[in-house]
Amino acid sequence: MGLYRRKWRNSGGKFITNSHWWMSAMVDGRQICKPTGVINKRTAQQIYDAWRAEISQGQFNLLKKAPKFAEWCERYLKTVDHPNTRKRYEASKENLISFLGDGARLDHISTTRIEQFKQKRRTDKVKAATINRDLRFLAQILKQAERERYLARSPFNLTRFFLNESKDRRKPHILTLEEQEKLLAVTSPRLRVLTVVGVETGMRTGEMLKLQWKDIDLLNDEIQVGRSKTLAGMRAVSISAHCKTELLRWRSLVGPEFSEWAFPNFANRRHPLQRGGRKAWAKALKTAGLPYFPIYHLRHTFASRLTAAGVSPLTIARMLGHSSTQIVPRYAQVMDQNRLDAMKKLEEWKKAAVASHEAAESPSNESTDGMPE
Image 1: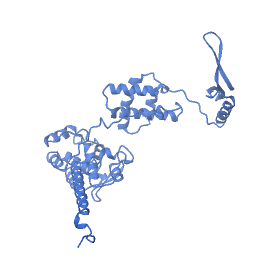
Image 2: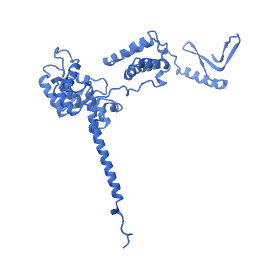
Image 3: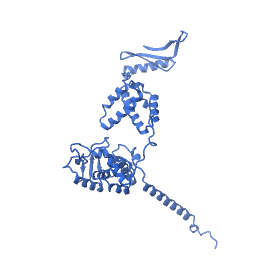
Image 4: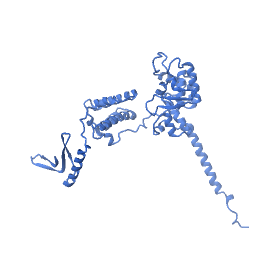
């Protein structure tokens, strides 16, 4: 144990000594050798003394033997509670294993392999958002491996791998008030109330479908969202007069006496939720003469209308159930009417500026004290 210089035989059989100093010590019954990275012995001794101090204080931890990547994925997935999140991670796991191979270990995953995975997925015409979901899953499990000392450092600490999703992201359809009236005129009662709740509260589709009548307080005009994909999503949502009217109408048709769920499965009252509805939604849009867009875009409509009304991003984030304002710009789109109003204000400002400038240079405003008699 101590400092030494490494030696090896060259092709001619002669010993060659490395100019750099190495250090050796016993840690947990194992001999560990590390390079000091210096050629000066005094400096190497200082590095060695500092390393020995770390060992004596228990600050130097040996890495554990890295498990197979597939095994580590399965172990990590057991800690994921939300079924939708687990389902998405399962898909990412399959994508990564098909590229890395069943026998790949955690410590085999390098920055080069991650870049190769990205290039392969892009070659397969996979969207950037899908690739980023796979990369986020990979980043999480590698970070957990780093915490548990299976890795010295995650490759995601060294560089940024995530792709820019803005080019591939589909622009959401913001429902205008005129389009909303056309849509409500042709929808079924159930789809009508879901549409109104969506544009008036900004709730996620899953949050709406999981509502129970006890969560809807029509006396205080409030909905308690207790089942959401995030902790920030568990919130109190205020309802407008229009939304309250539609909920009262729906309650008169399908109230608590029918089912505890606000939007139950009519075929089976014991089933908690009515699944699907995409075909009915697509049919309603076609009947109303509107282009197809997911019902989730009603959430974008709600955020855009709040932005147009001058509501602060922080308030919009809280109403949407977000923990920060970073994602609000993705939901809040500038509507056409706002663009027209902005251009009108710009033209009015230009006219006022020109008039003010002309008035300042008008001869009538010049002093007559210096004029000849």
